[in-house]
Length: 363
Image 1 (cartoon, one colour):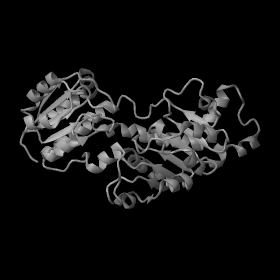
Image 2 (cartoon, one colour; image 1 turned 30 degrees about the horizontal axis):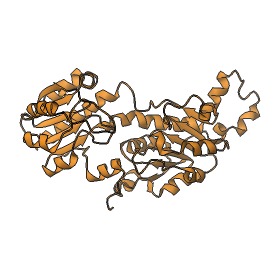
Image 3 (cartoon, helix red, strand yellow; image 1 turned 90 degrees about the vertical axis):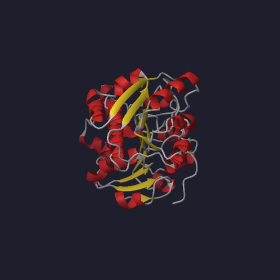
C-alpha cells in the first residue's frame, strides 16, 4: 500500500513511550509520516487481554479515526472489531511488545477487514539468541563448575592430569558439534545465523515453521525425540503455550545422551523441573538455565548448589537495547507497508496457532 504521507499513531502508556520511542527513531518515522502519540494507561499483562473500558475505547476511537496506521503497546486498550470499524482509514496495526501472544489485537477481526497486523516483540530475540550461544559455550567448557570451585577457594587442576577427566576438557569446543534446537522462530533463526561459523550439524523441531526452513538454513527438521536424543547440545527456544507446557518431561529428559549440555532460555514451565533435577543428580549432563519453574528459583532448590548447573535469573532478553529495538523494527515495518512493500513480521494463522498451542497448519 502506498500513501504519500500516512498518519501513524502510537497508543501506549508513558513508560513504554519514554523507553521505546527514542528521539532518533521518532525522527525517522516522521521523515515519511505524520506521527502522533496518545497516552493510555490500561492494565497490561503478558497473558491476559486488557479489560474492557468504554471510556478508554472511546478515546482510542477518537485517536485512531484519522490514522492510516496504528501502533500499540503496554497501556493500550484491545483493538477490537468495533474499534476497527470506527477507524476505517487504519490499514495496518502493529504491536510493539506483546510477548508474542497478541493480547492487544483481535487478529481475526483485523484480517476480516483487510487490516495488516504485525508484531515486533521479537526485538528481544537478539539478546536471547546471543545468550543461548554463550550458555552453550559455557556448558561445553563446564565453566559453571569451574567458577564455583574457584570462588570457593579451590585450586582447580592443581595437577595437570586432573583436567583430563573434566567435562570441559572432554567437550570443550563448539566447532563441529551436533546441536539440537527446539523451536525455530525468530530466536531460533537468529541463533542459526550465529552458529554458522562453528560448522555445527543442526537437528531442529518445530511443527509450525514451513518446511523450506530446512533448506534455507541447511538443517534437519525432525521429531522432538530425535532433537533431544541425537545431539550433544540441546537448546530449548520454544514459547510457553498450552501445548508446550511440560513438553520436556521425565521421558524426554531420560532420552538425553550422557554428556549432553542442555540449555533453556525460553520458559521454565516447558521443562519438568523435578525430573531435570533428578537427572542432574546423576552428574552425567550439564544444564545452563536462564529460566526455571518456579521463578525466582526457590532459595532452597537443589539446582542452586549443583556444580553441573549454570544459572542466570531470566535475563537473556532483558537489556537496555530491547525496547528501542521494538520501535526501530516497527518503524521499518511501517515504512515498508506505506511504500507498497511486503511486511516481514505479520501475525498469521500459523503464528497464532503456535502461540495458542493449537494444532499446526498442514504443511
